Every structure is written in structure tokens, then in C-alpha cells.
Image 1 (tube, rainbow, N blue to C red):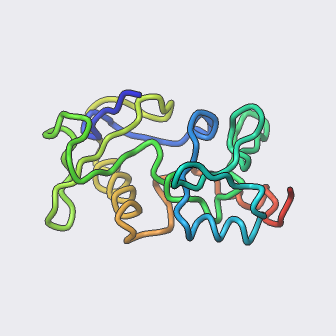
Image 2: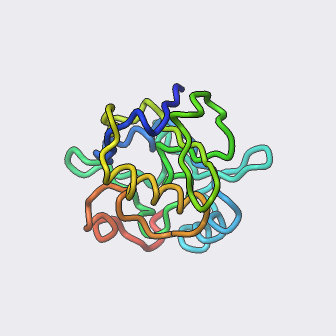
Length: 171
């Protein structure tokens, strides 16, 4: 994985390719795990050494990933785990992946370091647009800090996603 500083990215838009849901295991905090288990059952989750995860299908993709035409949709859009809300970005308290000057993002009197996973197909490289720098990244930072829960800029712009996927227990 190669992480690039946010200031090298002109914009980001989720293009519903599903790569993030196929390539990565989703770590859950206890509250997320409890909420998912209450709504979908324990068999939709898995546990590892000191971590809880969303279960994966036999093809390796997330159990809540659905394909509709050429779009990949999240069955947990209405209760999406924080790890999923933040992908492809990492918001850190120190410049873990280097390039501190390019990764620094001042917020609330603190310097945070924001990087993007370069494997994401929705990244557009270049000088950040005003909207990306002041709205999109800010939203990711606020989700990471627990200040915000709702997503507007930091998800695919598909308003009907949660209506297409059943919200009752399906397993």
C-alpha cells in the first residue's frame, strides 16, 4: 500500500467500484459490532486477535457488498462502520507515512496528517480544489474525530443505495 498526502489530490469521488470492499477487512469497534449483530446476526461478523471484523464472502469481498449493474453498493449504508466511512483516507496525529508538510491538515488548533490509499480509483491527482480541501477533507477529519456521523461529500453520490438493499436480516 502506498499512501499519498491529501495535498497531492485534486479531488475524490467514490465511483462505486467496490475495490475497498473486496481488498480490505473491515475492523469494527464494539458499538458497531453490537449494532450489526443486533440487526443482522452474529454470523455477519468475525473475530480475530483482539479485533472484530465484518465477515467476508468466499470470494473475499465484504458480506454486505452487493452488485447492481456495474455499481457496487453497501448494504450497511445506513449504519456504515467508521473504517468504511473513512476509506480511502487515514487521519493521523503524526506523519506516519512521511511527507509531513504535504500531509498536514490544521483543524481545531491541531495539526492532523491526512493521507489517501493510492489504490483507490476515485482519487484525482493534482492541486486540491477548494471544495476538496475545505469540505471533503474536513468531513473525513470530522468523522475520524467523532464530531460528525453523517456523510455527504465522503460517500458515493447515490441517494437511493439504502433503499435498494434490504435492511432486515437476510442471512
